[in-house]
Length: 234
Image 1 (cartoon, rainbow, N blue to C red):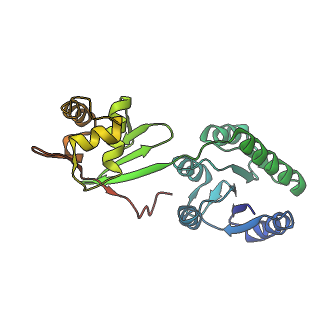
Image 2 (image 1 turned 90 degrees about the vertical axis):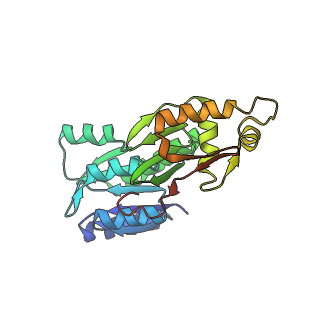
Image 3 (image 1 turned 90 degrees about the horizontal axis):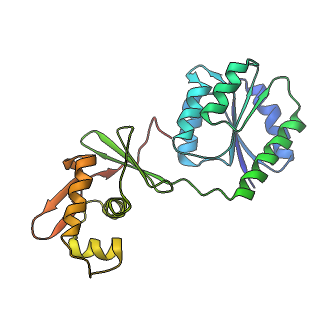
């Protein structure tokens, strides 16, 4: 059973839509503000979300932008705003459909099913992003895209640098020898182990020295801590 979130300040509208969705065997949760929907998405992302564009605590556009930083589930905008500019902004930010009020509930269901069918047919991979904090700096690792973002700035790493950094961040605070890094990253002990030093030097040049500690004569340790409490992030 798929879970659908509805975010709308008008509870009467949300309840009408909830009843129709539940008849179609969807599990539904409703929200009236951005804070509530963000907290719930952080705890358990839905299979899709239907949102309005205006809330007392923020804009639907800002909500879409925040969601798309971490999630790929479908977003349907359901709103009274019929302007072309709103539609363009919505799609540019990453919404999957834009429906104006008044609307046909049956048509909305058909559109939702079409989106699910398209996604399942494409077999989109899950986007996995890990967040790390150190000295008030934030590092994000997007496993699917092999992308590192440091304080919102993308960092370009080579494939070898990505492998080494990925192993280090998966073992925060654990001292890893050069030999162990060679084994985990390159599945071999035949490479000259000092090549790890070169890769670490290059990684530091890109992300800064403070993230990785050198233990002389042995190896390296990642000093970042996983960010468990996202609060304002989803």
